Length: 91
Image 1 (tube, rainbow, N blue to C red):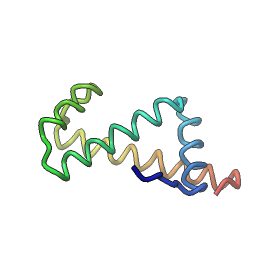
Image 2: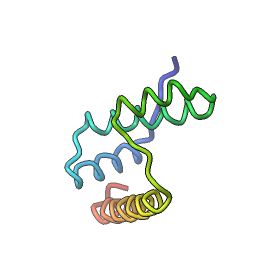
Image 3: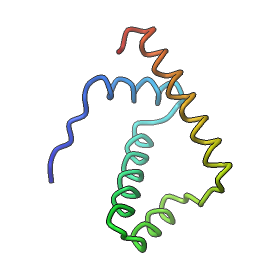
Image 4: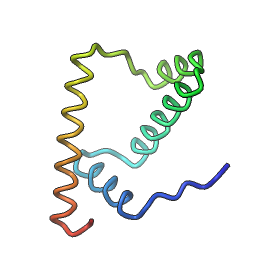
């Protein structure tokens, strides 16, 4: 298994975003793991495994409007975090 090297800028951004939103490091790792597994299983058409991940992490399917709204909210949050990190001189 290869080691994953994440640039210091990304790590600082993750830290700023998570602290600003009161997200623990465990939650950050759990979210990263969940997203990785979902993308991996989708890529290789491993749908039974994908269903297991979705059930384990408790995510439910969203309708198209909810997905659009969530993407817009997430983008706004990330843009705000990037601006704050730049203001603080972290990136």
